[in-house]
Image 1 (cartoon, helix red, strand yellow):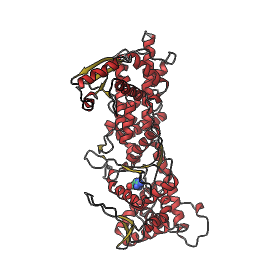
Image 2: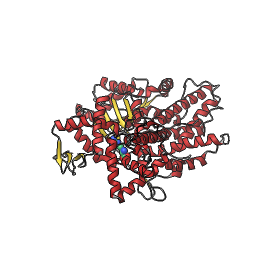
Image 3: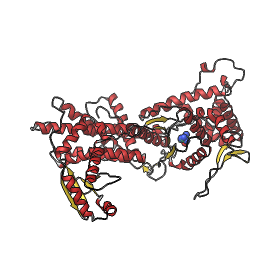
Image 4: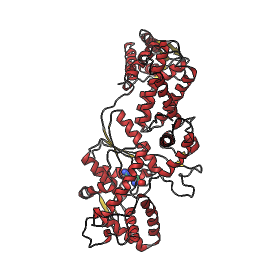
Length: 582
Ligand code: ARG
């Protein structure tokens, strides 16, 4: 429950006592604030049910509402729209409850176990902007789900299976043919072998190996053979693979850490493929697999499909498993180890067909019960000014670290606070850069593409991460400066701006609910900007620290405290860190 839900139920009851039953009732914030803060538009639909004039119904309801001291300025507009306003006394009472416990704004849902798959970084390859979007959106959706009472687990689902690693090892073999990993007669302990390779080397090796494989048949063939050796855990090759995963994973973890992204589960595709035999057995037993030119496939098309739906490739003709199969094995593993009620995939929208195929194949074999929700939460791309996926200056794929550096260069220039020393300035500029990048990424609806504009994202004014951080820090600093003053109780509301802020605070419940329902963060990002700019308007209109009316001053401080709490809560949902100063 939440404050606003309680109020909604009370009004629903008043309507009932006036003689009218409603199934669903929500209190609509009014678009015409001159008429009232909220609207009740149900007289029109009730008129149909009760065969009465809507205006008459509205009048009956208004009589009921007028008995309640919490409401004022109740009026009817047009054919039967009821406008109502909450008294200042009641708003103040509500704010005092919020000040005591911000949870009164949060409508907890029934507990549900959800696994959220939002990593997908690939071992031995640099993270790129696509991984940024998965991580940002996924982490925020997970935090939102947790806040609203779900039992949510994030899974990094590392790409550590398949051919790229085979090629990387092939290239390492070219570079260092004498490494004991390639010596069949080596009898020592591989875990003690020094590998003269860093993560930076790995990131260089992969593109090199993959271009060589394109030009050289033999190279390609050996890469394939090595891939199979790794998958069959062949001594030497498998040990080298483990070492590479370890090096790369440490770097991937550090990058996710910079982004405030944490996974509860750190499985890789290779861990999931341990369930392949069981998976294969299920599909075999149920007679779902079909032979097709040496490969095994699963037909997933339905009669009523509007678009072509190709079969899912289960085992390729060369005997290796496909990307689809790794995802099926993952579903089986999750069922066995976690038995989730829902699995959400926060992955690029261009993989929609892939997920459609694996969901259909899952249902066909009933890998999970029919009521388990499987959902692909797709997203658009981050583009350059040319409208194409964002690239480096020389046209290469923009890796995530380069992207963060680009923003950092810009935010570093923005920190003008003289009291901040050089070392600290770098740390703060990094936090602000991450905030700039993350907020810009979460602000548009996730499904749409957007353009990377570093100056705009880093601006201290406007709808940006830095603006939100700067304003939130200023709220905290006002509270600190007023630490000698009482900050416990709100007594009154002095202006329309304050009233606006309060109505927005009450609206938080519905913003959170809507966001979870849509599994999108744009409403939260918008809301943060709205409440922050309203607060800044209030801040400019008043001199809080020198106000002579003590009760008014305390009311203002409490309002500041609440907005600061709301901002901190929501920035935390978006996984944006607030520095102490900037
Ligand atoms: N590793 C994949 C890539 O970089 C993304 C994996 C997405 N998650 C999944 N369960 N398929 O494209």
